[in-house]
Image (cartoon, rainbow, N blue to C red; front, side, top):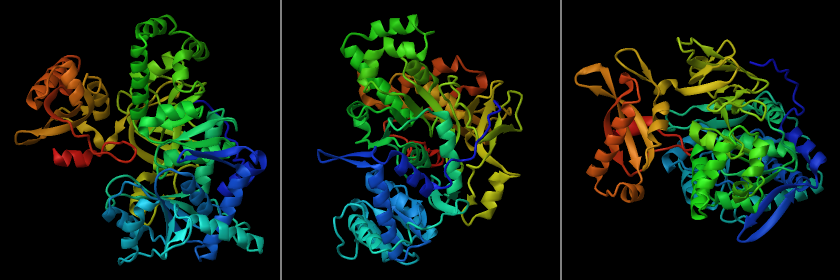
Length: 566
């Protein structure tokens, strides 16, 4: 790995960040909002004033030092609430908007939140939870209501009242001193609430990650970020929200998965961080457009001719394709799940700067990232400047558990010292991911340690690796590789797969609609794949379905739940 010097953070905490950004970029647009066909821009000076007003109201409500939650779709109000909590009020608890009522209730009880910001669709469920037993919830704050009503606060009215309090000299929020080394963020890991752990992050954790991102990507106040992934997920919160604010860039909110390409074009987006599934959809859009224009063969020939050109040269050659995506993309960042190497290669062959990053909730999140200077297909990049990484107990192929150390590593799991001690050992965080690091310092993720299937002969099978192969079969939307006991010998595990197929493609390409016939056709494809694999990896059984796999809010497969059903 390169010996990179880490400079101390230019910011001490997120309040310091917001104040410095407002001073440096006060007149620059921080947010471009579109609601019901009308647009509105907010400058960084305005954002600082709004945050100060809302934070002042929260302290006036008796919430100083308290835990305050946020739940809802990505929006301007969500981010203002977050900043108002973390920049001088209390501890912020971002909550997954997809949780069912029983799990939402459990999160509110376990975190001891006393107030919650929410979008209107959560009003009824939160009212029921507030008046149930075993929770500390006192205040409901609507991000949508224009005024207080029926015992519910309006975020907008709190901002108005906070402005008045500031004018008459109530300065407890603006003068609040931040301790960057104590818990300021509580994040629930994905999974069922009974098993999920609560990650405690400090502002120092987050700020160290922001500085690392600054040294990895040459972002300026002229860049425009598109926010799509759920803000309660630390990948979007750090990379898609706090990082652009740190750099004085502009934030635009996506209008849904189907409108991503339109959003990229309409807002001349330069930076987009997302999951692999979305990049596959964007690529599908480009391919369909080229087919419709009868230009696909021409582009394929150009790709072959110019594969050794620089990214800048490719960008000029394939400007037509870049213009389909707004013409201004500088960075497409893929994280949260494995990216298909073929998709990465195809993007980059067109001069589209798709690169991988890697991290976890426990690391604020970024551990490693590709950059313009350091990139290899299939790698998640090199450790960011302040992070050390190594492989624990590598096998003969150099594969072992990835362990990391740095100022971005969490304080621990809230109220769970045993779980903390299990993953934090001698200053090193054990990620639970199997990886290898090559001679140039690039990290290649092989799969989750807990997902590895160990066969009777001692061989390891990485499900994610095999799923990426199966997902290339025409008509396969997604797949799940799992081990199944053969006969009465519990150690005799055979590789099986569940395939989710696209009925329209099966009808169009295979001319099949009967599920038994579809299963047989896909099994023939699997048999062809088996011939290319070592014998121990051969897939012995196939299950098919047209129902999508169960996933988290960031599109990760919930393997345990799926395997229970199987």
